[in-house]
Image 1 (cartoon, rainbow, N blue to C red):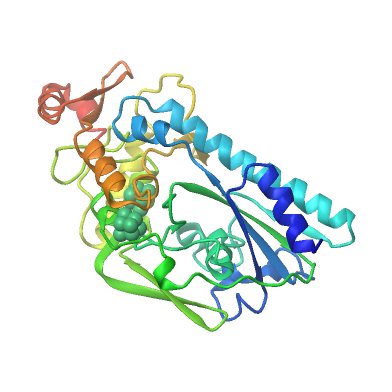
Image 2: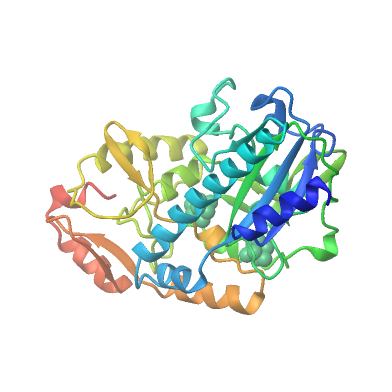
Amino acid sequence: MSLEKLIEEFLLEKGAIKVRFATKESLAGGPPSSDLTYQLPEARSAISFALPLERGKIRSYLAKEERLGHDEEQINKSILSSKISKECAIWLTDMGHPSVRVHGNNKYRTDLEGWQLLMHPDISHRYVAVASGLGSFGWSGNVGIRGYGTAIILGTIVTSADLNPTDPLPEEDSFCDNCKICVKSCVGNMFSKDEKDTVVLGGKTFSFARRNDCTRCMFVCGGFTGLHKSGKWSTWSPGRYVVPESKEDVLQTMFRAIGNYAKWPQLPSPGGYAAGPLNGMNIRLTCGNCCYICWGNKKETSKNYRLLTSSGCVVQRANGEKVVLTPDEARDEFERMNPEHRSLYC
Ligand code: SF4
Ligand code: SF4
């Protein structure tokens, strides 16, 4: 049996839904995070795989019925992806092919200027997934697979083994129908509706929405704000800052919001994704909408959008309790708040 087949069987048995292979050549010419040798100087290939996320938990999360189920699922699947990758890397190394896993998150190209804001990963799971044909870019720039959409967790192993690359997916096999629901589901207005960005990998050009400014996602997904500009729904964050139009204003408002966030009453709460301490605070991610909402099927994705936009708004009371209210109730309760407490959220 070929090494590729053995690897595929190894990963499918551990829960992967699909496995594909990229090489230095099929990633050539890409951005810094496509350079496999950054992690392993003798790297020749990379293995890409995907794990599915539970849809029922995503729906409860989007509808604001229950946060923890999906929160934990997302963390557990990321840990599982990392664990499987490590096992595969050790197995390949034992067979004489030095290999390393790529971590799920929180590993950045700290050698690149401005990395603190740009947050380029050490190796991009997305670039390997697209170059290998595991999946393709959706309009959001998230990678998805037909039948699953972007509600998946990617995993990657970098190896010195000389693996046969698999081809990128042809456009007609893309899961993305350009419905742009991902654009509408972003409180941060992160994605252009019409303009594209491109990335070249192995001589092939791939496109997706131009990102207006990645700081917008840090502001919203980081949990500092969450209210949609319509005032009709929010993420899981009780922040009610309006995300400004200009990049400079976004930065200024975000820094003010971070200062206020440190004063939010903290109740011990289980779950949440600890994205790292910032001034001693654990940042809990509160969005991910652009990724979870897209199931690669217009009917299902539209239903997810309806759930999200009728899910209400989160408000945090002075005692630290967070409640989900209708938009009008949330506005009224917010306006009645003690001004000192209210000023921490807008
Ligand atoms: S939500 Fe629609 S436009 Fe966005 S990635 Fe999914 S299918 Fe493509
Ligand atoms: S995670 Fe949320 S804030 Fe970030 S880009 Fe996606 S929808 Fe926008």
